[in-house]
Length: 348
Picture: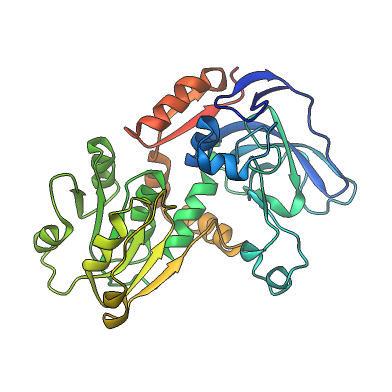
């Protein structure tokens, strides 16, 4: 099969022939149709310090995907050949304290598809049946199915706290931040503001329903509050960027008792006014991945019940390219000029 491959500990990928993966008794083999390019994949491609600390090459990367089941192991019970599916990228042990308590997203032995085991930037991928999400809704297109993983990040983050009637600040208008706008609107938020420095992404944010899209290279969040008629600060914050200046400015603009969900991974230390966190009684909650599998149920239910949300999340995919043009796709994703970039593995 054709696959993007990192042969050793250096920057770059190669599109090469690799052996097809073999399904074990509890596994499902999937013919990959589409894959999303994630920030994690950009780290792995560039072989930065984060990648060097977590990746063991050789490796086939890729963890956001949609495809068709072509083979099932003898112990597989519910997934059928021919099912159209996406996959939860965190493979858990099932026996640690958190797994046994039903908190599988907190497994201390998690192995990630496309990070610590071969992933989906290939014509075929194998994952355990327990990680397969079957799409029963025919309106889920291959492009939409490919971004269920990051959509799950947005849903997990946005639904961490009640949103009905609340004023929401999102920092970072990347694909996940953009999807969080649509989710927050679906969940009943009052005012939604989002920050970034990319004009195309801020325009996408407006199209997805943000009340205010703030270019923080020219405007401060506090000044923007006045444009929204706010007097007491934001109730809910979603930090999606990982930028070292985003969280401190968010904290400065939260109402007393405000709650912040943090998904963005910082690349450097962040200086926080912990005195303000204490005296303003703020709650900071770290978010990683998706709740397994409550987030997945929520994603499918919201998309099937809300055509506006369905259209908004689908619109986050701004570029779909043949997988053979993967280098162009990675360049587009790295530029930060648009939304989600998807590779089509039916075209090589």
